[in-house]
Amino acid sequence: MTAPILEARGITKRFGGVVAVNDASLTVGKGQIVGLIGPNGSGKSTMVNLVSGELMPNEGTFLFNGTDITSLPSHRRARLGMARSFQLLRLFHSLSVEDNLLLANHMRMKASIAASIFGRSSAREEEQRARARARELLAWFDLQDFADRPVSALSIGQQRMVEIARGMMSEPSLFVLDEPAAGLSPPNVDKLIQLVRRLRDEFGVSILLVEHVMRVVRDLCDHVVVLDSGVKIAEGAPDAVVKDPVVIEAYIGTGWKRRAQG
Amino acid sequence: MRVYLIALLAFAGLAVAPFGIGGYETNVLMMVLFFVILAVGLDLVTGYCGQFSFATGAFYGIGAYTAAIMTRDFNTTIWVHLPAGAIVAGLFGLLLGIPALRLKGHFLAIVTIAFQTIVYLVISQWTSFTGGQVGLPMPNAGPVTVFGVTLFEFGSLRSYYWLTLAMTALTLLISWRLVNSRLGREWVAIRDDETLASAVGLDTTRGKLTAFVAYAALAGVAGVLTAHSLRGVTPDDYTIWISATVVAMMVVGGRGTFIGPILGAVFLAILPELLGKFAEYKMLIYGVLLVLVVTLMPEGVVGRLRARAAR
Ligand SMILES: Nc1ncnc2c1ncn2[C@@H]1O[C@H](COP(=O)(O)OP(=O)(O)OP(=O)(O)O)[C@@H](O)[C@H]1O
Ligand SMILES: [Mg+2]
Image (cartoon, rainbow over all chains, first blue to last red; front, side):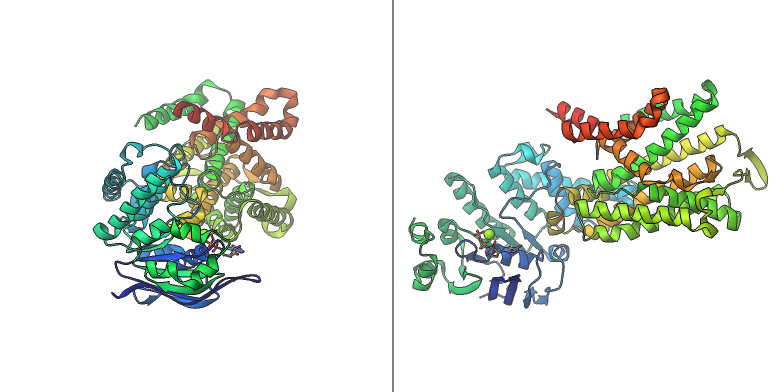
């Protein structure tokens, strides 16, 4: 395996009496797509929120490119090169598609806030460059016609694409995707699979992918980690993991078999 | 560019207005301008950044009392008081911004009400420092001199009016630049979704604190101008009623629209003058208006018109 970009070591997160994540560890190698799966309520989104810094773990350590980031708040992690999407879509709903992307680039801007307030040319030119890049990315995602529209005018599928474009706008080295296929029609799921693969192949982004749709996991992931009630119960190659009796056991009654085979 | 042109024409009109109207009307216009500064300031923190505050009256009072107390103790002039009032109020704004880092919505609103109450109690009860219920008198701002040459004497109503007008223009320009800057866009991001804002790398702490400081500093400037033009300060000019009035102005006009709170301030500040003997019911009328706007068009008049135009 290549050098890890993300290492989660012995992570535990409790909500009152609920142990949402229980001494779980996982590693994402550079250039890898790692899947994080498990039944409903098994702690996947909690793990994503812990990785991105929205939640702080009770125990355990996170390393990003070898540095300890456990105590960093989420905006600091983003600045180190971590982007994420949300299970329940999140966008700045009163802003245009382009401005949504632009905000993800603010942290990379070099001109001072004062320069921006006084409308200095350094700040204006930098913003123009960022807007041009946002348009390029939107074209890449086939969204160029929507740049000036408010995000609320887009379909759910398009909003999901804006979310991913926004993540790419921040030039991440690790992209954490929380169920990006949720709510997409089957043809759009195919497009998503293509797209995620291209993010890795063309932009060299490492990806931690939480997903319920097994087809996505099987097609994309180099490695899969399985959570059940917050505990890591298995990991390995996707095809091996879905056949693992422990994993099947964990999913019985939750429709896993149907999904795994479908 | 068109915005600047319209603004320029409006200010030119207001600048010559005192030649055509009486002293009473000039006073009313000046009061309208105080409220314009207050409403635009509140719009920065609430309309753009999404943080509620019922403490406008407190920051307004802090600016006014800074001017009055500095006049009494240091015999300084209005040119010192304007920056000093902005800085002192801005520092208190920073202080009030700290609870906003953890509290949201109603809880933050309650803290700002508490802050407003504390400031009122201090200015009305700490008699030895603030003059208590009676307040403090202020002399004329004195002559404006450059290298010992007197340009003009402060004292006439018009001179205060013009200074207020100039400061209104300046604060509006600064606010306009702020909301159209990177910082202003970050304020809107925080208002829309704070979790997402930090997930995309924005420092929401900086965003909220700068919004509170800008808001408080503008109210402080309005306070300095008010103290000088009224030739003194009394605690009852800086109560929670002022805060509530400014909230009504902002909400009726349209939060986060920039022009909305300006129009709201003009409309609601002039309204009592048109009501004649019913003016004593103005808070009631503001209240009813606020309830109507919040239920029927929460985005305010200008917000609604813009949404219409976009469709
Ligand atoms: N903020 C919270 N407060 C209390 N309990 C929480 C919180 N967030 C998650 N939980 C609990 O933690 C457990 C794990 O939830 P989580 O959302 O991480 O699961 P998940 O694997 O993402 O599920 P799904 O597949 O439905 O998205 C659940 O029992 C959930 O109720
Ligand atoms: Mg989840």
